[in-house]
Amino acid sequence: MSQDPGLASWLQLSLTPGLTSATLRKLLQQFGLPQAVLARKRAELAAFVPAAGLAALDSEPVASAVTRALEWSAQVGHAVITLADDTYPRLLLEIADPPPLLYARGRVELLARSALAIVGSRNATQQGSANAEAFARTLSATGLTIVSGLALGIDAAAHRGGLDGPGSTIAVLGTGIDILYPQRNAGLAGEIAQRGLLVSEFPLGTAPAAHNFPRRNRLISGLARGCLVVEAAVASGSLITARAAAEQGREVFAVPGSIHSPLAKGCHALIKSGAKLVESAEDVLTELSGFRPSGYASTREPARDAAPAEGLLAHMGHDPVDVDSLCSRAGLSAEQVSSELLRLELDGRVTALPGGLYQRLEKEGRR
Image (cartoon, rainbow, N blue to C red):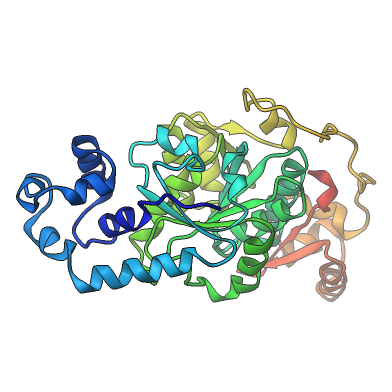
């Protein structure tokens, strides 16, 4: 894509230590585009920029960082998008602290599409990951782009589901766009770079840091019309994203779970505070005003695995359960129950949980 001829000026301001995005926006309001800002006498800028920032503005380290970013952006499939670019996502202009620029790798056109954020626990259950992937796949099939944070667990499942449909997916990183984190998702990040979009507001080379991830969460929600939370503890980054979504005027959705599961408590808290309870993709689509699904069939069709559960599975219910309880319910010995649980686990119908508990899994077709 063609770049703003003043990109070097945007980069010089954004890469100057001590010059925050809020300060940069004030400079733009006062003096105009970055080239005009940099043309001003440094004494004029001193009213807005701290002394340390002014000293760094024309330094060699900043000049080197600008050169590196320009070289990166010149590569095929790479782009640095500024507030002045037509490709800058309109929805981000509505949030309280829009980043002055975005580093992007992949299909930049996805930034202009209607999107839904899907987030949740890094330590997701097998059922939670299956739910997130199924929701994302179904919603991507309607044309919605799936936005998430490339974390392990729910995020990764949402990206995989998004890639399976025409809506594709956007991963918002909490590191520099050239840093792969977590490493276990390196392969997934490569797929997203080819068929979706990687985005970061952080300079190249920015390593993982705890304070960067809550900051990037406002972009995950900011890029989307709504935010769906699938499995989250009460104290989690997913709830930070959900709160950001609510503050930004976005729709907030949550998938309920077992009352015994710690990973359902965050979702239940959101529902109590006004989030929409979601059981199917259709529940999401009916709330997204202005979005017209394409190629969409109702998600309330009968599930492919709708046959009644039989054998031990019929005694499990949908909440976690221990072996002793199953022995009592089914009238079987511990050896018989353990043997049947192993068979069901190998068949993908049951998953083992911490504390000696087991939980029944639903087939993907239920979403």
